[in-house]
Length: 340
Image (cartoon, rainbow, N blue to C red):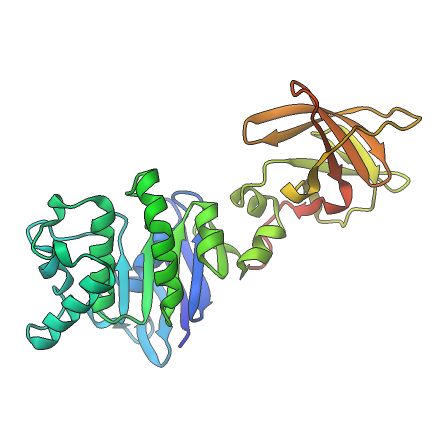
């Protein structure tokens, strides 16, 4: 069953405007802090009520403004993993997992089942303050699945964990997501998490969805400058069309052959366009330009030499290192948001 959300809610500093359909499988919502990612999850879960629109899961209507219909969170088949896990500190692990379940043999059986699934059987009588952050996440996941949800909402699931604990639980959460047959929505500002844990990706900024599509496709081919920035592209330059079929990349002081589409204002150099070369290329004309290529260690100035569609780079400050830029792999970007 698909989840359809078409809502609009105005907050003090921005308007959250959602128009999306989510299908079974894993979808990541990626964007900067404050763009409306967590509010999107809260809207779906029923923790906040939109001012307009509707939310429909399969044949079940969760919200319809025109019909004055609003289904409360406890009556939606939605499991929500909060950033801080939201465990009840005064309850034991066993009591936390079974909190939303009716007392009885079935409740006991489900609690036992998910304690075993998430390897926390030995923690059943402990309280949240007595266990580690990673163990708390397992308890929160067990509680979520005991509720038997159709939709999983994961809000920055690793934000409360240190690097070592995150590494230990990363594969575990990956397995949980890919075993689940319903809809999983993962909110994150971490690009690696979005890439690894989702098959579909939504880019979000200032309360609006900028782009949607297959995760790999979106990462490899941003359409606009803002999309490229959100995706972490670091080598971006404004461009100008010059006479005689030439393009000038302003920030790189680089001129090359090509024709720009009218809407293109920038170009981005993806990682695959920058390759190591065994030796520098030197042509008879000795064309040289200064091109700032940003690496993980910061900006490095490079000497640029032209060779057909390849531009060879000599990083300053690095001994024996040569790189080349494949101009055919530069990505054209428009300045405005495209139709997502």
